[in-house]
Image 1 (cartoon, helix red, strand yellow):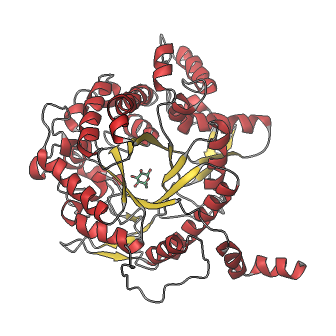
Image 2 (spheres, rainbow, N blue to C red):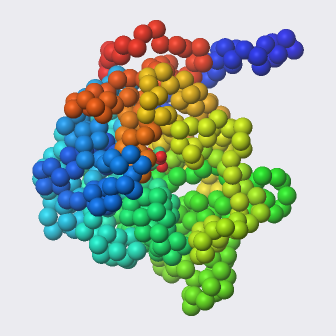
Image 3 (spheres, helix red, strand yellow):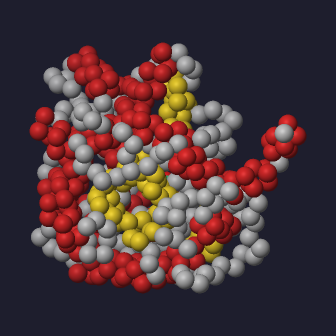
Length: 505
Ligand code: BGC
């Protein structure tokens, strides 16, 4: 017995053969994700309006690391049939993509619906349906129509009505075939990075003021769209509507009471701010964080908290407004109670008063923020299960960044995916109500302010080729093998790099 354990510790192959006996349930959904601005291109074609990313890259091109933009990107506006072919090659059950609001409603408002925009998404959805690939459709992945940004975007409470009108057009146009809608992708990144810093459009940098206005308005807009689906469409369409929130793992650096509390405050500031109002039993913003913001706001001379509270009626409106938890997960942090000294005030960092860092031994990706934190996906799912009474969860994104010159042999990405999927199996064993997993991403895409300097694709995209040729990386073969055998096989190596479509796909 001892000999077996020792050899298992030494030989990863032994680990592999043990894992091979652990299978994903038959109804577990495997997919991949993308987002409109990151892949579509066709930025001003066929009547599309300008989005905040079109605007930023046009008016402030050097904000992007390689001075690039999404004007053409992977050109999925013209290559969608090839995209569906790749889904068939991988043997996917589902594909999660997002709609460009400004492609459907060029002014952002529902006065004018662009038929060519609706037709593009109809074509994509219909092509997927031919091959039984389930569409999972996001309404918003960071590309607000610029005309709405000119009116304040998510800092204007009227965003609730504008989003409601847009959602109605979407449900009406696609809900006969789409049975899973996701209102927003990652409120934290929209509000904190877009409004509270300069790392995403509209780079407003209204630290800890714009962030919190956005948080409340976005949650109200989400809930409004959910209730519209519920009241006007659910009975005829029989689908589900939810939201996707990015949840990294925040573990206390030590088990001291101070660090344990600091880790909880970090969770509240980083994601529970957006998740508690929807999924917690009480509703409303997380208490410890809200208290801290109220105290700091008073000290800073604000007549009221920078975090706008929900009324009791609003709390009820938002609470429970999601049919599942869409979980984007990439990495983890250690948290200690040592306070940040050199942060702007006000800021989320100052409000939280915690220090977050990564263990230097965790393998690093090409993205400065993305390291492989051990078991982080498992940890967050166990945490969500306890915090929100075991909600239905879909992992809607999970992936690994490599450098643009990284090529097709992406063993570090494979290592990351295998570890993550082992976490998925462990979470299922622990009773997490997890129904599916989507890898980020189907193919290389415009990585926001990093431009094309980083790659997340299972397929490489050749940006010097006008056709934007897609070529499978080694990770594509490994993911396909996992999906086909519904198990993680550590010994599998593709024999060739030639991709084919298996029978039945
Ligand atoms: C976003 C993607 C992005 C990925 C990698 C996620 O937070 O939803 O759009 O490309 O992270 O940075």
